[in-house]
Image (cartoon, rainbow, N blue to C red; front, side):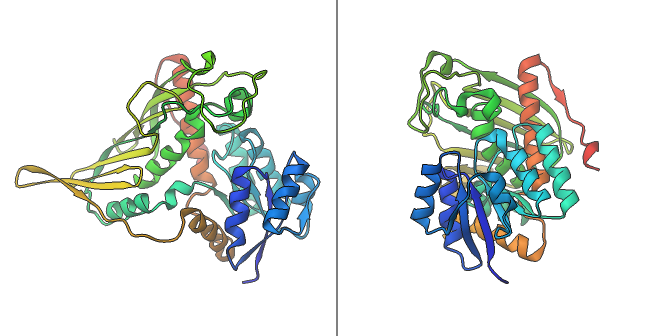
Amino acid sequence: MSRLRIGVIGAGFIGRVHMEKFGELDDAVVVGCTDMSADLATAAARRFGLGRVFADADELIGSTDVDAVVVAVPNRHHADLTVSALRAGKHVLVEKPMALNADAARKIVDAQRASGLTVMVAHQMRWLPEPREVKRMAEGGELGEVYNAKCGMMRRKNIPGWGSWFTRMDESGGGPLIDIGVHVLDMAMWLLGNPKPVSVFGSTYAKFGPQRRGLGSWGTPQWDGRFDVEDLASAMIKMDDGATLTLEVSWAANTLSDNSHFIDLMGTEGGASIRGKRLVYTTQKFDRPVDVEAPVPVGEDHRTLLARHFLESVAAGTTPMSDAVSGLVNNTILDAIYESARTGGAVELDWSFLD
């Protein structure tokens, strides 16, 4: 196929990652970028040899030289930019979370269905070697019936950019739950085979952020800003097949943790546990527990695999692995956790709008 011409909206860290990875692939060319900071966009264009710096997102989306758009900006802009790009006839790779909330995510799903174009959410953790090996185990029947799972990412001192968009509800949609929790939630739902969640119970806490404690090195603090999101969240999600998933995530907490992601799948024939780059298969033999360090195949960089999958989905007209509907499911679960935390009760989910 001819090379897909890509424009990147957002020239910060994540935007530059996409410029780098697409720039390494023969089937794509990054034609230009844009950012609220013209200096940042100009520096990124110079670094990656891009031919053009667009004045703003509207100019990039409207350009006839762009076939697909990467949306790599703060969360509250994801839906508007994605819908605008779809209406302009562009395919979209949008950073996680797909939208600020479920209502905004539904607009993306509606626009994608109306356009017939590709929308993919950039959930790079699905492409890590450990989850891919667990997926192979689960689909191959090695775990049996998986009826319970746990996932999370507990960071001890890692609040990003205090006072910036990261810690402002109107800009981000939440704290660690929507920032890093969406990563492990998406990975767990995928490994479970994308079941339908029917009930959610959750709690959120803000014990460190309001006191300006637990700050990390990511992002640029804005001390005249505010912190009105959570710094820890926990939840239980029940599926329509009876399986359960528990989620724990924090930016700051007094707990033993190496800050890496974790997931446990518990099946009738075996289990699989990921701790960062470690994968252990657990089972029972001769009435004894058996743990096996599972070898993980080494392959291409996970972000390269993500970029290639997007290109292949566009070229073939097939639904990408992390499509708009999966993004909507994630946003709906996150909304339910926040609602449960607010009300103190369980939240029942209705998926009839997807029919």
